[in-house]
Amino acid sequence: MKMKLKYLLFGVALIGLTSFSNDNLDTKYTTASKRTNTVFQASEGEKLIAKSDCIGCHKLDKKLIGPSYLDIAKKYPSNDKNVAYLSGKIIKGGSGVWGTIPMSAHASLKKNDATSMAKYILSLKK
Image (cartoon, rainbow, N blue to C red; front, top):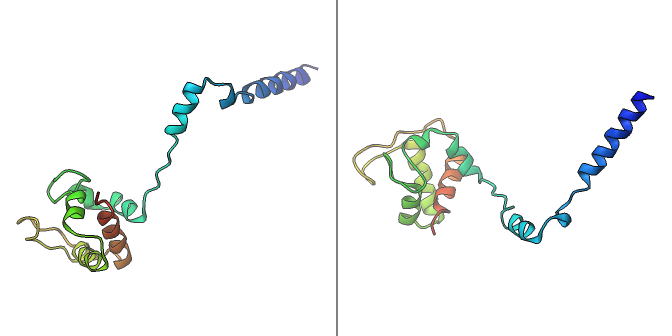
């Protein structure tokens, strides 16, 4: 008998908790929550950059050791030629374009991954 009563109370509590919905909330709050429910999905290039050593020298909007990603995007229009150029620079490294400090090579990086990274960087142009 006690067990049946526990299940009955649990069921009533569960139904009571699940009966709340956005329809019961003040419209001021539901309007605000509708504006903030945006889901951002990272591109493949952005994910690759985040898990690489790039973040040690580059930031999105500030020069660190190397230029910011936004500065790179401003300098190079997004086209196949620049994607190929930048993906080659990512793999081979280089110096002289942004100053005297060389960018280290990432020879173990796959060409497709470097291309995804370059496309992401160039997509940041505003």
